[in-house]
Image 1 (cartoon, rainbow, N blue to C red):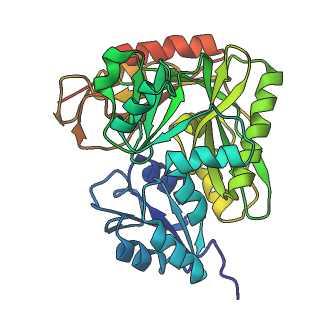
Image 2 (cartoon, rainbow, N blue to C red; image 1 turned 45 degrees about the vertical axis):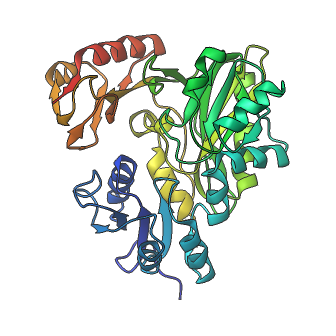
Amino acid sequence: MKKNIFSTDYTVGVLGGGQLGKMMALAAGNWHLNIHLLDKSKDFPAGPVAPELIEGDFNNYDDVLNFGRKADVLTIEIEHVNTDALKQLEKEGIQVHPNATALETIKDKGLQKQFYFDQNLPTSPCSFHTGPEAIRESIKKGEIEYPFVQKTRTAGYDGKGVAVIKSEEHLDRLLPAPSIVEPLVDIDKEIAIVAARNPSGQVEVFPAVEMLFHPVANLVEFLQCPAAVSEAKIQEAEEIAKKTIEAFDICGLLAVEFFLTNDGEWLINESAPRPHNSGHHTIDSCYTSQFEQHLRGILDLPLGSTKMKSPSVMVNLLGEDGFTGNAVYEGMDKVLAIPGAKVHLYGKAQTKPFRKMGHATLLDDSVEGAIEKARRVRDTLKIKA
């Protein structure tokens, strides 16, 4: 007999207990879902809000296997988990979303890129290299031209694992790891679309967002919704996002990051099969948050409306440069006095330069008004030690 999802007998397992796990657990709490998470410490952001956080290593085969065997459905909040254990769990009949094959492909940028080529999904050309010496040799042979971008195949996130090489003088920036190399794309805008899918085949997409990056940290600093792109162009990107999540056969969420070139061409930069930084604003600005939608997707529930309630701008709250230690938030009272300011602190005890410590979503009748509020938050709230 099939278990009732909305009962204490049904367990949703999540690999990872960081801020994404925390916000997923908060969304699950609205339905009182029995959600358990696996991570190295109960002190991680999800610990205080989840019904249970099991201490363990999501990179360890046995830890993932033992944790997953106690779940009715297993999902992730981070890509870099033990996929061999996930494959074994799938063989044992445990529902795993995203599926282990798709996850294994996505967490290796080389395999991910090849997947786009094989599926005829638009993306920039690239070459594959074992490390810096191989890249230097290809440059000598004239196979790589400046400027180019090096991306390590694994372990990259939040701007890490990426090197922009504009000339020979920059070659000392090459990263010592197996990599892909792409030409530096002539970009007009960077756009993200979060797609959702359930096992019944229903697919929905959230309104496209435009990403504005921090000039030093190479992190998304502001994220505005709706994006300042024509409706016709957005519809093109939405169709690509839908094709991509279907091609991967992913249930739950897939965040697809795009480059819109100056020639008006859409190119997939990369994808993430989980809730994503580019979807945080949905908690406050859409009928359904990305975290609730992810749960709907993995549990084969009807997907929620992705309609936008209000224009919004999200700002990542980053640790101040030059400060490492126990986090102190200065200016919170002033930020909370801003109309339409929704602040989400992740609960990380230690701040570091440019570490994501939270985010704020600013709601307004116009994007312009929300941007002005986001600048006030950025300039007012300081996270020090």
